[in-house]
Image (tube, rainbow, N blue to C red):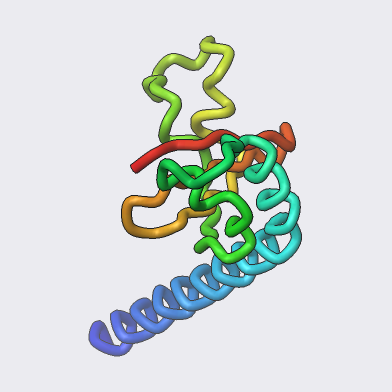
Length: 124
């Protein structure tokens, strides 16, 4: 009887894991499809403009629509500890959604704040 109960508990845990994974994948895909063009436009505005692509950042100009996107909960570039609840940037670090467009390799990445509709460039 114990083996049967353990088997049912294992099946229940597997069901919850599959549903959670499916939900997270679908939510990420929906957020990417909804905000990708806005993020690319915001990254274009932030990207430095120059006559010739002297740096990798300049070479990425115009290519943000082709960059690899992923959704992040919180901005890891903001250096705030989890116990600093009274800090004004705590929600930006741990609660807000960001769409990160990365060019791959040594190319810079662009972090798009979905809530504030702003972008920030970070180099690898």
